[in-house]
Length: 325
Image 1: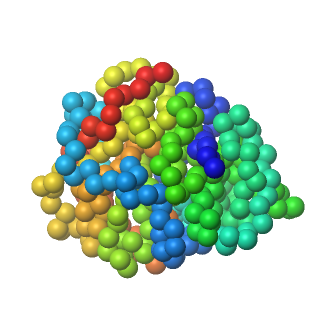
Image 2 (image 1 turned 30 degrees about the vertical axis):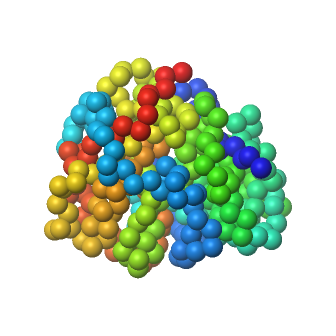
């Protein structure tokens, strides 16, 4: 069965209107919600097949001809620094994008969508108490993510609001079949502006600290993007046509010779992943804010070592031609 991957841009324009959300919507100022998942998400069900773009080793990919221009546009300088958009708590709320694992018999509920024409109709295996990004009172993105490992299905919502009867309202929603490499149709979004799933791109405590290995690409936003995208992205979220701005789906890789040895062990694990799997530009939001799952076990001071890394440590790899609808 083919499932659509829908998308929403950041705080709120219509997911097909192509406007930039030049706000801090991915920043820690959005005080992200707490995690209900400390277990290894790929114990019973892999997060997409081994040959999926999220799981592909890009250490040998060629550098894109636009690399310098696109990276220089992020924050207006190659020297804009990275930031951990995850950790313990920020402003009283868990900091990061949460997800919850649900059993195969989790009751499925109806979701009413603001942008139903690009949303999978469901129903969705999302419990009534699923954690909401930013907490129940958040005015930010309010992502809700549920992973059903028994059926290898991923449910993601943007701008999600629960009702007492267990149903939800949301801006948009997507159901991903994690056993396939099927992309969203061209022009369609997901819970991220680029039309990509969110969960595969999150840093998790069990990977970075316990396993000391991240075996997939990660996710980050920038403020200004172009009205264009590169596969596996399927959607743009900007009216800007400046070719010096990055398209959604741009994939960056840390330069092989970049030295992370003086940074915390957690950030050294991220550096290894940056060099092998890279990061996808997935949304509009604060520049270079690397996404992850909140967890009270994180050491926020050690995570902030990532701020010693800036855009000059990276290069854009060529993964396909830019699509300009």
